[in-house]
Length: 575
Image 1: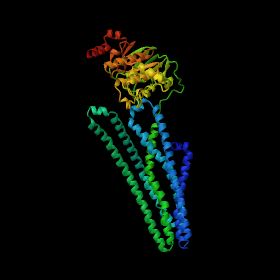
Image 2 (image 1 turned 90 degrees about the horizontal axis):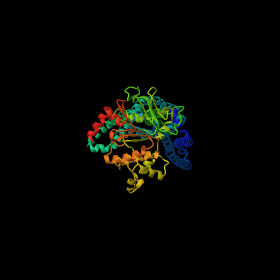
Image 3 (image 1 turned 180 degrees about the horizontal axis):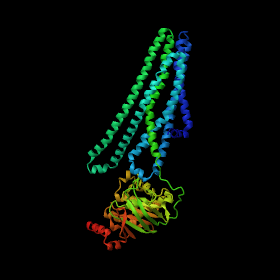
Image 4 (image 1 turned 90 degrees about the vertical axis):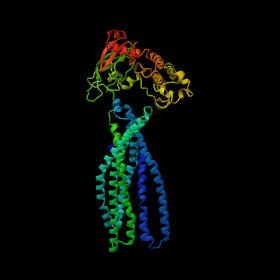
């Protein structure tokens, strides 16, 4: 993990080297004051060298001015090194998330993922800046100060240094407890973010059902978990800091007693004793800095470990010899397809499904909820991969496992009941179907989707902002934008998954006209609960319990007097 972390410094090595050089210089400048104190107490003052005293003071002031400039550079550019690394990790994480399979997002909440991309990586960036700086400068200062203190009195210095092993033992003892506590705090923070994202996204449902108190109770569970995790982590941190501070106090007591005895015995004079007292901070300060750094180390290391956890999840991958799917006609064939969402392959959602959709054909999937209709729609574009022995899906005779996923999905358009629109303008959401589309193509797609006249009625036309997930639009308006998006994509294969089931009759008629034009000349797979919308399909497959129970035209299935006729008559009576 350390090697991987260090690799992120490589693109910024020049700036990082300058930052480290400036940090070491700042540390070396810190040696000036005790050195000058020693000279003043033992030379200039006893010899009444007033001119030297003034020049020494001015020299120290000039050096401190240089240190001020260096500190500005370290604070500014040093933090920028961490920011650049954080941005690179966030860029890689976002790109990796785009390539992860649907199953990952089934198991991970959005808020928890966002926590890893924001809070965790911020702590990593802080570690990236302060970690090397603290380790390098503190190591240099401890070594130089030890050598300098030895020149004053080696025995006093050894007495102080003897306390260091005790300090290290305490640090190592509490390090593991702090690591585990900080990891738990990050997990609880992710839970809060996930609850918050869910609650804010569903605020309209909460208000509609007057369930604000229930949401508050749910949120409080995660909030209390965070409080408990913080209490655990702060307890470990408190033990760590209080113990290490006590040992630092032992340093000072040892200096006071040993120095006083040495002064009394005549081993050292008052000037040397005073210089030692002033100079010992050169040794203690970096030691204390390293102790304080342990908390930041645990935060950053935990954040980077959580970053690595996601980065090591295998993304969607093409077969080694996968070829682009070109000149797509649109024939689809499912051969003995079985599928389970569980990793062990149990509890099959689909059980030996075989189905052929000819080029330009229109096949409808109907049946009770949970029968496997939407699963078929997810398998054709390989949102979920078929495992070995789970059958085969072919497009124009090509096994979809042997073609690149990008080329496969470029030739499939999907219109779903739950339309997702991005925050932005109507134009941006339509253009999502083809980022390179011209204004004329966008307008043409909107016309085909029966959307253009509505857009012109808006004050800002195609530049109208639709809000988060299209909250400022009606269901029918959002659906027409999604249809225009597919028109712009112009795929050979079309999947309509309950595209009109949530609309009123008048809006459904308008949407159905757009869908009929969209289906023209394309191989179409329709999932519908309203059987009146699929009567004109070439064939209808009744899916129940993962199997095809019936298959035929509307007239054939009605004549068969089976499940389809039962569903149709039940729905007809309801209507």
